[in-house]
Amino acid sequence: MTLEQPLAVRPPRSLAEAAEAHLDDVLGYLLYLTRDRETAEDLASSTFEKALRQWSRFDPVRGSARTWLLGIARTTALDWFRAESRRRKREESAALPERVEETFAEGLSPALEAALAALSAGEREVLALRVVLELDGDATARVLGISPTAVSTRLSRALKRLEEKVNEG
Amino acid sequence: MTVNEIVGELRATRPHASDALRLHVMTIAARPAPRTPTLGERLRGRRRVALLVPAGAALALAAAVVIGVSRSGSPATVSTAAPESAARSAGTTGESLGAPPTAADAATAQKAVPGPAADRAQRYSAALSLQVEDSDALSDATQQALAIARDLGGYVVSVHYATGDEGSSSMTLRVPSANAADAVTRLSSLGTILAQNVQIDDLQESLDSLDRREQQVRARIAALTTAIDRAETAADRARLEEQRAQARAELRDLRASHAATAAEARNATVQLDLRTKQEPGGAVPGSGSRLDRALDKALAVLAWEGIVLLALAIALAPLALVAGGVWATHRARRRREEDRLLAAS
Image 1 (cartoon, rainbow over the protein chains, first blue to last red):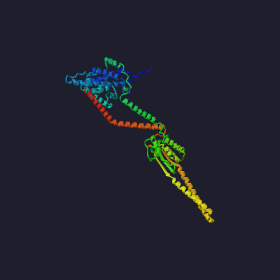
Image 2: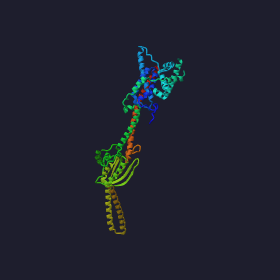
Image 3: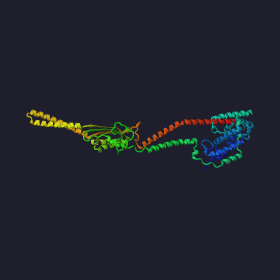
Image 4: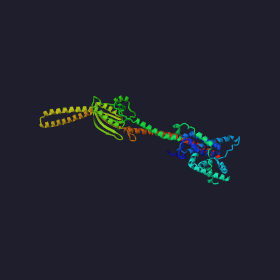
C-alpha cells in the first residue's frame, strides 16, 4: 500500500485535478483584477478552456500548476482588459460606460471594499496574489513576469495605499 | 484599521467559486485532452535550441570522424610500374613539381635522359633528388633503388637511411654505363623529382693518349733491349739496362692508368637522394598509423567546420543583435502597455 502525496507536493495528474484544487485561486485572482464576479467567472471558464488546450505543455519542473494556471488567467484577463479598453473608446462618445459591480468577496467590510475599488488593477493583483492567495515572492514574480524585488515594492505600495484609503473612508 | 487587520480580513474573506462555476469548469477540465503533441511541438523555443546545439555538435563531430576514417586509407604509394615522374623532369635541375606527372610524359623522359655514347669511353655521373610521401614510401623507394641497381648489373657503393620528423635516404650506385640512362629513368620513377643532374665526361681521348704513350714506351723498351745486346762495354750495358727498367716501370704505370680509366668508363655513378615531405609544423602528412591519419583528417574537418561556424556567426551576429533588440523593445512596450492597462482599470 502506498501513501498518496498531497497535491501541494506532487504535480496534478490531470487538468481536472488541478481545476479542483485551484479553481478558487483562479477565480479570486480574476475577481480582484476585474472587480466583477460575472466577468471573473467568464474569464475563469476561458482560463480553463485555454489550460485544457495547453495542458500537454505544462511542465511541473518549471513551476506549480497553481502558478501556471494563474499565469494563463492573467493573460486571459489582460486580453479582456484590452478588449474592454477598445470597447470603452468606441462607446465614449455615444454613451457613458457601464457601472462595474464592485464586489470582491462575501463578508468584506464596505470600507475595505471601497478602498479596494479605489486601487488600480495592478495594485489589486499583487494584493490578490501575495495576500489573499498567499503566493510566495518567487511564484508571484513568475505570474507577473517581473522580479521578486519588484513584487515586494509593488506589494508595499499597494498595502500602503489600501491602508490610506481604508482610513480615509 | 491597520495593515495586519486589512490582511486578516482579506484572507478571511477569500473568494470561492460558486457550485455552478465549479461544475462548468470541471466539465471543461474533464474533456478529453487534445492529441498528444509531436516531438517537434513538445520541443519548443529554448528547449529546441538547447537540443539543437548538442545535436549540431554531435553531427559535426560525426561528420569529421566519418570523413577522417574514410579518407585515411593507405598513404600514397610510389609507382614502380611506369617511369612517370621521371618523365616530368628529366633533364632539369632543381625543378619542383607540384602536380603528379602523367603517363604521357614518360616517353619524353626516356628521350630526355642522356646516355653515354656506345662507341666512346665516357665517364657518366648522375645525381637525383626525389621526394616521397612518407616514411613508408621512403623505405619502399630505398629498397627498390637497390633492386634496380642490382637488376641492371650494378652494385651499391654506399647507403645512408634515416627516419624521423623528416626521413631521408642517400645512396651511391654504380651501374654499367650501357644501362646508365635506363637506371636514371627507373630511379626517377620512385618519387617526385626535386632535382636531376647528369654529367658526361669524355675519356676516349685520355685512353687514346695512354695507348699512344704505351706503344711509344714499348718501342723504346724494344730499342733498349736491342741496344743492350749490342753493348760493347759493361758500363754501357748497365746504363741501358737501367733505362729499360725505367721504361718498363713507366709502361706498368701507363697500363694501370689505362685500366683505371677504362673502368671509369665501364660503370656509371648515380647519386640518389630521397626525402619525405616536410609539413610546416614538422609533421609528415600521411605518415604514422591509420588512426593517426584518421585523427589528422578529422581534426582538419573539425577545423573547417569551426571556421565555417565562425564565419556564419560573424555574418549573422548583426542580424541576431537587431532581432534581439526588436524582441526586447517589443517586450518592453508590451509590459508598459499592460502596466498602463492595469493602472487605468
